[in-house]
Image (cartoon, rainbow, N blue to C red; front, side):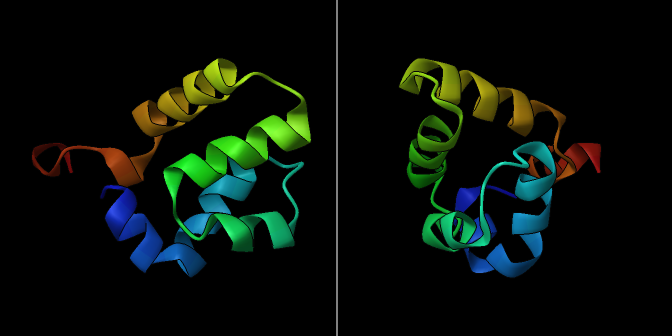
Length: 74
């Protein structure tokens, strides 16, 4: 899965995002709607981190998430 698929299945996928970033509110998750850049903005806002740190966290999440595994690894 990629972020395009994540946005299409956001109702299901946002639970994985919420598990990673527990400080994000439902309103913030709804605002993200599966858009990676918006997730970065919300992480910066909620956690007071830089955009670079938010990007690092998102990359780490993608590397560990079952949603972003290559198809051949599933």
